[in-house]
Amino acid sequence: MRNVLITGASRGIGAATAKVFAENGDNVFINYCHSEDCARKILDEFKNNGLSARIVKADVSNSEEVNRMFGYITEECKGIDVLVNNAGIAQTKLFTDITNDDWNRMISVNLSSAFYCCKAALPHMIRQHFGRIINISSMWGQTGGSCEVHYSAAKAGIIGLTKALAMEEGLSGITVNCIAPGVIKTDMTSELSEEDFTSLKNETPTGTLGTPVDVAKAVFFLADNSSSFITGQVLGVNGGFVM
Ligand code: NAP
Image (cartoon, rainbow, N blue to C red; front, side):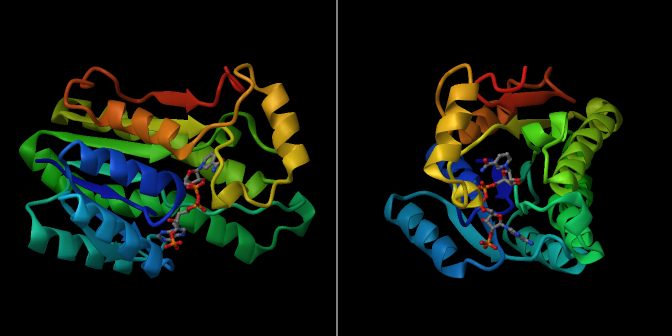
């Protein structure tokens, strides 16, 4: 049974990913920050279905909280085999309206969090000569998104982190990949109007929007033991919106 940590797994893509791993027999650590009720609900559902999981609170933008979370994890098991850096926030603002605080928060939640979690997870992965790290970027990290400069910069940073770390860790049996989702219906996109969704669908070759499960299944594929020859890649899960 692999030990899997998914950051930001109380809702949306992270929650769907936790479910896919747990249903496939992995032991899942469900990280949350604010949504304790949602995390507990997921845990109860998993337990009722005989799945193996724990919830663990940490603001992953804070390195001390990340280290405390890993302290708890190493009390519960030897260490993390699969790390999914999913926690994220979004904000739509004109570049000229983005404050220094907006910028710093965006970078710390969406990018520094992955740095902290990778640092904490890697020693165990290196020791056991196996690990899978999957980072959740965004298609805006590939192309840049208007009115989301800070978000796009953080997500582009995730792609750079992924590629560089994949080079360093290849000989250690650890793969590092990232997924760049397109438009996925979650709380994060709930501010978009039905009109917005319709025009986004029309711009998408598949004519559909993505679901959290679409992303979760791609994460699970990259985490598979047999995906050992795939590393440093950016997998678009976007219906062909970005090719
Ligand atoms: P969501 O529904 O808003 O969920 C965000 C998750 O991140 C929640 O579980 C939240 O936990 C957690 N989180 C936020 N700040 C955190 C922090 N400081 N520490 C720990 N957890 C934190 O978003 P989503 O759509 O599932 O997005 C998941 C990931 O996919 C994000 O990285 C996002 O950028 C990326 N993505 C999403 C889309 C999309 O269209 N939805 C597209 C491309 C990429 P709490 O509520 O417990 O704080």
